[in-house]
Length: 151
Image (cartoon, rainbow, N blue to C red):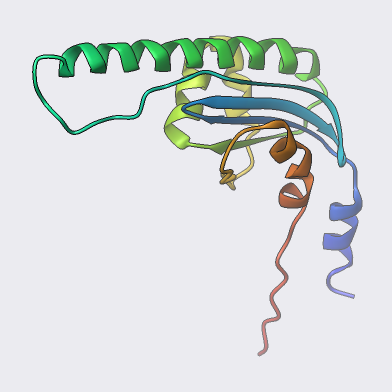
């Protein structure tokens, strides 16, 4: 059977680190197979952008940048604390949320560089990086589409 290797690989329990980040929140976790064995989620308020100009526009922009920086620093600290103990065992890393936010978190701490090296090709799109989304992630991680090619 041609799909047997694929099914065997899908049945194997892998250790997967997860980093989900969006402006406003983050989720970090470790899965052994489908079981979430370590996790931490958090959120911080980040103002949305606005199109109006005026004298307060720069103050508004600076305040938003401060909020983004605080979120990125917090998420990077949590990612380091949660994922560092699993560095030697994690086979893969799943990244998701907003690409710019994830890249900012990874760039905030040099010790997170290994996450990019083990990242799977697929970037996960998640609406909000919260605990329920993190718990449902194995269904997304281990999903596969099998196409039949006729010759």
